[in-house]
Length: 316
Length: 256
Ligand SMILES: Nc1ncnc2c1ncn2[C@@H]1O[C@H](COP(=O)(O)OP(=O)(O)OP(=O)(O)O)[C@@H](O)[C@H]1O
Ligand SMILES: [Mg+2]
Image: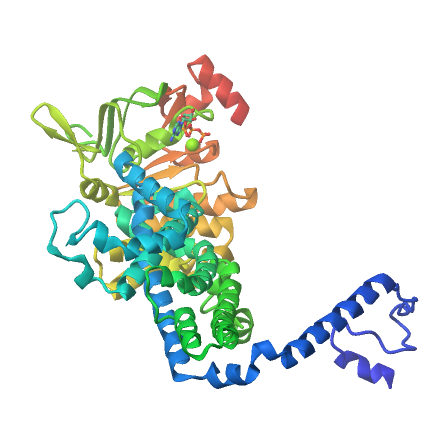
């Protein structure tokens, strides 16, 4: 009977007892960790006690928490937080690419400007930067908009043209660009110089070699930390109150609590929403990292030669 | 050869990196259809010279012409003007280059590697580029590897794809910088075979190599470089059998 069964067994599972060919399974006395186990039990008890205490603690006002968790204003504010995050990340990404090109340029003026930008924006707190953006119209009552190094295209009054929302997005984006620029630069430097050289030798322009050859390969280095930045940005948006912009998740829940005099449950509501949104991003981040950690070659397995089943395995 | 413009003409070409003069007044010509092997010890400037020919490096002094066209500069009156990047890129289209480390694009299949430049640079029709790429793959013996990524190919196969990639631009001149030096010994032959075929088809080639067997069998001429100068050159069989200079003899005794 044991013999008939054996071929079906998965590799690595223990052989049937009494089997003839394989060596006997070791039946040793397990090593015990009494102190470790004791600490674990104590921690578990504390944790459960904390939860039980929290669930019954008056100050948390769980009834209020539940009442406002799906309040229209709170969920609308969560949407604003997402808008702030996505918009500022998108603008930051474009700026970061520009900064990286400037930093890799052979022109010392471009390099210095990019360096100076990164120095300022990484070296000062984002909260302070946001306060500055808030008082922009006091510093520069009129703004002239134009591309760098070109004469201004439009001129307008700062206060009218830029809402607090726009200032918040701008403030977050300009700060983030400095960090993303570092990430993009590291990604581009991670690609072998021979790649650009081979592209140039084929007659491609510098732009083509960057866009078609270098940047796609740098993505595996750029994407994982950029995912972290995204999660980080979602939380940093709670600082836009410094502008002052007050329709994001944190500011909105605080404003509601100012009316209801229940700050603690509304803080919990905001935290719950933040936690939910960052958790979704973390799951996305996990899959992105899994995909890009694999390296370029195996991220896209051989198209024709690989059998369909091995291919599914590699992707899944 | 009389009256005909040589494919490559170097006249007193010099090049320095800072205070380090790497090329010292190199003069040589390569006729149309000729295969020149460039040999010499490490650091003698062989790679630098090749890189000057397709303007990956700029020449400091002297003149370098490919098919009659000055490389890297434009002559206006008696002054030289540096070429704009777009014009330099145009010159490189006609010059294929094969690197020691292959430098295939790892995120593209063999076929995609080959059609990239024809499509992006020459604005070739994609379907036509694919047909041509398959022909080239068959020519280097890799018809069945069109959809393989470089990481799934052996070194010898990768180098053959790299040769096909360079040929896809229909170059008039092919530069090889130690194309077999990074290969396991048993893979060297397949790459040399492809190069030999190419030489027989009439391609003008400059090959930096330590494969003296290849030089003897395939090359029309051989130049020995040391310390940034061409120490001696001539018919490969003659130079290899009876080197005239002490430095050549010392070098050959090490590699032969
Ligand atoms: N980009 C560079 N900057 C500074 N020095 C360089 C550069 N490229 C090459 N050199 C120097 O120029 C000299 C010649 O280098 P080159 O690569 O041309 O030699 P080679 O003959 O190809 O040697 P090998 O057989 O090792 O490839 C070396 O001393 C090298 O250090
Ligand atoms: Mg070299």
